[in-house]
Image (cartoon, rainbow, N blue to C red; front, side, top):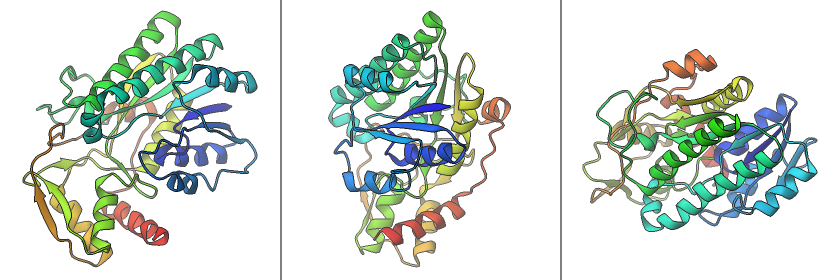
Length: 315
């Protein structure tokens, strides 16, 4: 199968491409190398894919419909995994316009070029942030998510709605996957585990917002990839599916684990609470288990150990 991965040089996209290549698929990866973080990081992410038979990288922006048409004219795409997005809750508060432009207009451009080329199967990367500060714990796909608390979350919810529209009007098969705080080797440098690890190793304070009483459902990247691979195989109709670990980890426990695996102590600097941050995430993964046979294998302790080992190799 020929699979197009948008955001293919990113954290999750590069891991997914490697797995799909191993399974004998052909991969066309699109990435615009957005300056949100260093290009060098993304080049390192895809070093294991470049030059492999069946792998092609296109440096393009998903908002560029003509570039997308050119790619679809060169290869017969069977399936699209749409991971590309402007990511991050806090940065979206600073530049909501660009988040909507990339995350909605980019998705729309992709769906339209798919329609022109009669490609009707997609997996779309959504986010646990769409649940906002829901008091319903754990978060279930049937919960009302009409109250996002950041532009990023709202753009992801809007992306799900756009995907449903194309399913309804044009018969697309689309699974929208709500990722819960993905971590592991190659994690983006703006995310907490990476930032904390870097700060501690440099003997700098780590920044904790509010009282530090938040908690997250941390999901190891290999488990996310396993869920995506099964979604590609089983996509049918329109579904929204949580991909999480279904265990909530308090921030204090996370910091303690990073300290343990680094064998260093953190210095904590408390800062004011940040607007847009959710208090707690916790995935109900019954639907993923039922539809995909999803069964996360990696706990937070093992995952932090793997991340720290990878981080030390990079630095």
